Image (tube, one colour):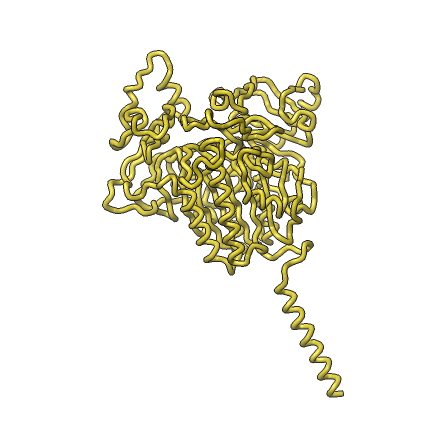
Length: 549
């Protein structure tokens, strides 16, 4: 009897060893790793056709393409807005930004849009045990009162108050002052012996300011030569100091040979170097990954390429054949490669979900005469299937290159036509991480984890697209743009020179397009199908009032 017990115990021991060894093997395709690391690499103004995986021939992006080869590429994925601030708000909060008054393109004097008690993607993941970090562009406001932020003292509320454990920010955009980084609650590298940082923007809105001060009968440019704070040269007072000319809106304080929106003074030791920015953000991200490799982490790597002012590192200059705009996409692709390389070196690639996408559509000229108009060489930032771009309501404003890669969890080489939106990232990432979303959170975000993993071709039933032209909604093949005022200045940005982004401006009428038959949105079917217009308008107004959840 004793010998049988001995053999039985040995057998149990063998089973235990096999079970332990089995726990160390790579997960199978039908299993989901508990609490995967999550990295979102968020591009800026990168269009559907800027990525070679989406058909670009002149701009080659091998590292981004590799993600598509290893994972799933979405053809019908959307940012929530054709402008950067609203898209970022939606991604982090799971709420369409059109619901929030004032969620437009912010200056550095605007208070933070996201309230500290809000449900957020990083906050939900942090409560589930994740270490969370944002590196790069923020553009969601800082502080709690308009125009009262002291850049020389503690800067809060900010990302650390809405769920991030760490933050290293470009606070607004690279064409706006202040041209300093913010690490945590303080300006990074600020020497107390520097002159204090002062920041001021025109009281008028950016575009109103330009229209009022430039090009109109009786306008006197000399009245705006004086900076609003300090005495640093501006693009208007010292154009000879510029790398390339800028319009009046972008002719504020000159830093690194580029004039910016707004005026600043002080903080000499903390000024960033535009050409080193991609390297700074990459190194910060790599450090965060290494420090948290043994625990689940969420990294929001929010890059600035290819937003103006375009100043890539010298190693990327003249590499694309389409000027500075293409060179910055090459720089972005290099960043993606460095992040993947770091995961491979740490042997945590299979534990990490990477999502690559962009905040809004492309624009070639956006205030700086940087040669992008002259040097585009026929490159179409939208590709052959869609048109439009940043600011406006056509598909090119919000339909984004979107790729998800996760070895052994997402089958390689998939292409999905599922309709997904960045507003869904909160609920989807929470689902994948086993995190709880509060029951009382009134979110637009939907759990599309099956679509993201390529397990289902079913995405959301409809998606709302915000732009300076108003709201649009897509459901199935139908795209409806509500009637209303249109953004004349938005089209003026695109209709310059002989470029692929030249486009006929929308009028104030309603528009209806069948995207399956007319992906370029050239034939308005509103008069032909009034019943569909009525149904789509009713649906849009219904969703405008209440989330579809």
